[in-house]
Image (tube, rainbow over all chains, first blue to last red; front, side):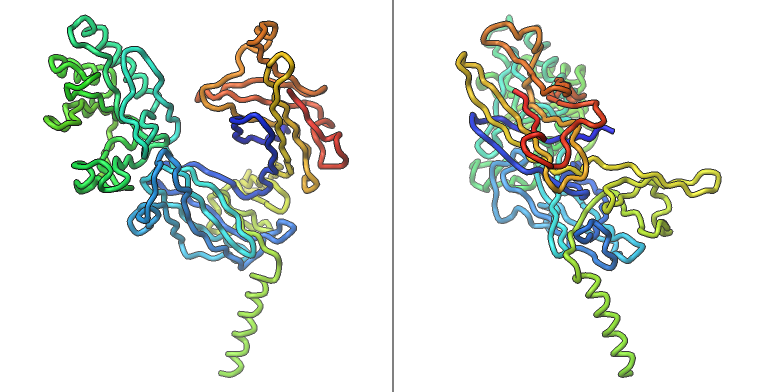
Length: 288
Length: 185
């Protein structure tokens, strides 16, 4: 039997790096989609690894700030009562000599790195990657420019592979049909999703984007960038500024979205506002 | 009443001793533990995979023709890896990455394969085909008896992997240094 050690490793510096790796039968990490639940058994072992009956560890959840594409943090974050962090529930069952205690990790809607710590005399921590799986980052193409990155969300172009493929097709078709038209520019692709999806809270503080962040719902760790959780929704600039979709092409552009798989919700959003854009979404789920 | 109270205290004390009498470590797993007596409790009858942390094994439990069958599969986590990397430039200006992997004294298994993920979007490329192109060479080396390869997972992420097929090879639990070294550059 081939035994493997798999670990992620980044060589970012010239120099030396050493580390002792994990040594345990307990899991060290797991990945869970936002708003889902996974069950876990918790137990105690002695120094020989033998199960210790009638010992039920405590279990708590915490989060690693500035993960999941959120380059911001505040006191509101981590309040389980407000669903701004995942929480743990239990069926109330304690370990006996025959029964395992069971807990449920209820993932919040925030995509980020969290952890579960279970403690007996000593503690074990497992990292919880709360994220949607399979996201990729949008590459660079001549027919569009990536816009909308901010200090608080510096990477805003993550999505499912099919969504990113649709973006390339939509903007490519727009370029093919309109690049000969006066004032055509490669279209600006704004927010898709954060690195692992989940809540895309546009504002880090209520005043970080004056005029927008005072609106109810535009507060940290909450929606309303509602359909940008799943990596299936894309905003294309259409406010007559640089890299906007030409007004004469709005209807065609919506048609491109529909044709290339992002047409479940495709429409001109925030009409008349400075951030007017064409929102194209291929998802079938909207969280309220 | 007094006797009942004393009995209750004794039971509580016994349980407390069982809880804290040893240096207990906590564990967490999506897989339930296999009972020490082998009798799967009623609530877990639908489970067929269990964890046996004392033996570092998964227990597969099922019924066949009315007979209860259990099979154990050793986990690959009874190793105690210690990893070291150095990065330097040689006289030609090429960057050399040297990885050293040691299996520590707590290990109960040999390390026969190890992998690390390259950062997303990077790849070693056609190493052998470009090895003679000055300044563009990427060459993966391995110690005698080991194979080195670059693999790609379904999500397109590249991995570098070193492995040995030898049943007696691999890096044993630490016995002496530096024989349990794996070097690759």
